[in-house]
Length: 410
Ligand SMILES: [Zn+2]
Ligand SMILES: [Zn+2]
Image 1: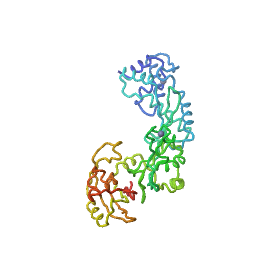
Image 2: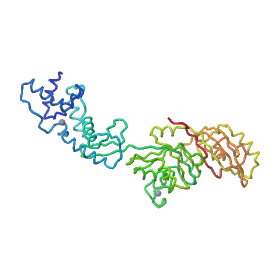
Image 3: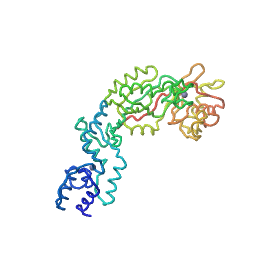
């Protein structure tokens, strides 16, 4: 079907605006707006048919004359973005199904090859108008905010892109979980058992760092992604554990990370300490999660009936370098699948002695269950210190001294 014939058929469907008419041929020619295309086609049609030229007199059967309202939509967007710090933005549009169906009907009826959808013209035109009002740049790939126009509801929703920073934390106090732990009884709703907090523990490393970060970034939430995690009753000492903090819906983006580090360390003093290393990305969260870092633990061990240092050292000689087979520990098997894990003990040696107890330094592959390495977990972990000694042994205290992270980052 030739262009002239297609235009004649489109005009016969019903009253249509220049934008919608032009958009059906949106990929033809360059340097024209859809409205210019549409008006040109309307003029050409009148000349060819030798009929009186008549400009569009609404309402358009496809868009219901949406385009004269572009300026008002841009004002709505600018209003919704007020108070949200951003350098770049993107417009998205939720088109009512009936509007989309109307234009799609024409595409398929006439077999049009290069039409532009209504949604993309609205996004572009409102985007240009918003840029003119706010002075901010549209960014199609990584916008800091996205404004979504709901054409039917006449409303604008704003989605703020998250921000990420990375660092290392040290947990100086026992009994703090790494992340929020919802109450087992009420699953976060709040009940008598949890004192209506919805949580098993009043604080977490996530909150001790996140509370200050949420304030500084005026964010909706802060989510901690750690490179592994230590047990609640273990401290995280030494150089600290690498983490990435995700700020959800931050209304401020230009926060001084050095000042933030100081503020966190002041407010979490004695419980958690952080070093903030710089900005991060979603991608880095994934790398962090998949990293298989070795971990170094300092544990204090009690052996039933006491033990001589040389006997302990001989036992550790046999564990050093050994591959340990560990069934999911009895203490967590109620909430995790019962599997067998193979992990290597990279190093194990006596670090000190006090009141008949020994301190051991153990370096293990990521995921090694250290408490079970000592106790044997009723035979679920083999080999184990208790198994080698032939009598019960257990961990009295456990600290993480080091989590190997990548030293260099691109
Ligand atoms: Zn229209
Ligand atoms: Zn509860």
